[in-house]
Image 1: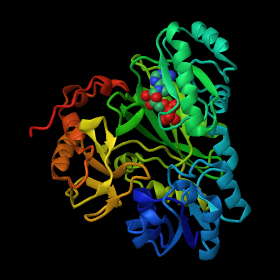
Image 2: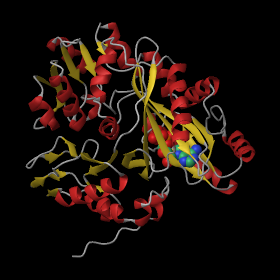
Image 3: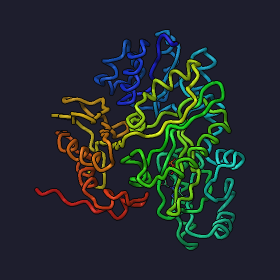
Image 4: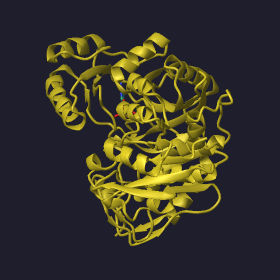
Length: 449
Ligand code: ADP
């Protein structure tokens, strides 16, 4: 087992990893930017190293600075968390060259799944259903127009290097193609320095259902059932739950097997997520694979009663997995509490938290790095907490979430809490009747005063 793990991340996920390391008797090293000096991950790690100024490019994304911190602290493994360098094959490679274990898949596995077009080709070979599409990069506008016509509108234009819902545009008819093509390419170029685009058939009113998988170093891959992440705003997840209200035992069997096949196709090592779109007839299509721990991993942890970070560390240390799939025994829902003003188009709302009370009680979990007096910096992701509730049934879980949301009080900054309160009351949400476009027609009621 590892002696000391350096956590190449910040915020709630850094804290989350420190907790598991402590329970496993592993020493921890936090890294932080000058903007995060007062952050809890710095306080709770055994050691902490300041690696640079606020800008991520000079701190959390700087491989030389992180490697220097590894060297001076004598860490023998690095946990990348999610975001930042978690899916950066070069970083994984450099760690390996230095004899440091990167807690995650191999650089090759990251590369095979990082490029969405290559990933789809691999899945087709493995016999996993994928969304029909261009099957490769589009050379120019004319080819794009021709292929879109063949596939049939509506289609979705996607950046091959895309992520976080960016570089994506839905095209409903031919005369919109050219202008949306230009917008999507510009956005992709700015965000990922890569404007390579491809086309997929746009699946109408789909569900986003993903499978958690774990693979070990001996070729064994299992699944830990699904998460439904259909409640999204502009393709970004806001609420996740397990099991999916749309799931049937037959569909779980089929999708679970496809997820395992996907993992086996690249000999996957570590925890990972296979994302699918599911149409209203319960046809499912592979969309992409995330080769890291995800923000929404706690809903799976709650319904199968397993620590996924521990699983990830054990696999990285060469311990074989048990070899059986896991099925949900309970229902869990996670809501993302972001520092955003839901009454002003979800505009970021950084600043000082003057007062804070987080929800407590049976079946309630809050993963957060913030506290009263903490200042949310404007430089990073706006998520300040995850509120997770679990109960015997979905109905009870929603009721518990309503009660937990009422107890969650943040003063000084605006958060997404008012949105979640209204969502929990929505009839369609309560009936499990929603798809990824659900929030396009969801109208927020204005606050009373
Ligand atoms: P990202 O990497 O940016 O998260 P994804 O490929 O995972 O991008 O897609 C994000 C979301 O975009 C999905 O959850 C879904 O809501 C929507 N989406 C993506 N592809 C399609 C498609 N072919 N048809 C319909 N919706 C899609």
